[in-house]
Length: 257
Image (cartoon, rainbow, N blue to C red; front, side, top):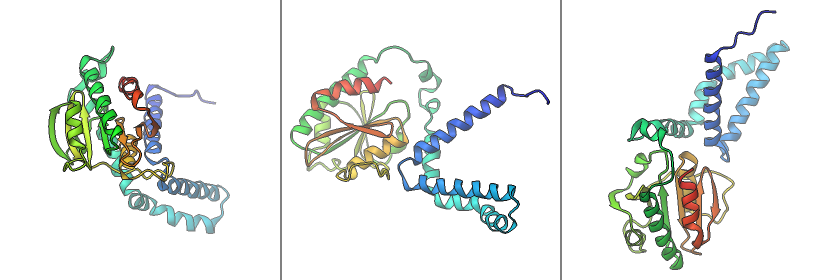
């Protein structure tokens, strides 16, 4: 038996493949697309089995199907492929600050503290008056592509600014306000909606938009229901209901992760 030839490049090959597969899984989990993907994998496994067993008729039928499999995948997963490319293009090392962001260590700076305090104060007021709102807080992945769908603000963040944006008669209250550091980058921005079947049935478009951005980026999305005044925090494809007095604490913990 020959010696096993396994080098650094082989290990790197496996790591990169595993990372890409994980990103695909994150993108598709909870959607109808994941079931389609499982079906495609099952057909491919069956095709491999009938080839080994030399079942000629089934091999011919499944082989014809597999021959156009790539085209079928592109058609069926058109939206998912676009989302996946967005995730790849939003990798940490492509941020505006470049490689410096990779070497940041230590506690959150005063800018982060100020923005969280402003967000928490505005959230308390909006929830008390049952004013619907959607705030998206940038972490590592840049959100410029999503901010570009709304109206540019680039204004210093404050409680009064957020309350003004989400005032019920304000023209920008229906969209998302995107926040980066201590700056409200844009308002009225349009976000991709989640297709997850795990979301509660009572969640409307605002909550599904928050879930959608949390599935595609590492952003934090904060929603306030205009029916109940309840506050939900979406991150990493999941969500939790947050008491009004715990908003600042949860944002502080998650912001620095």
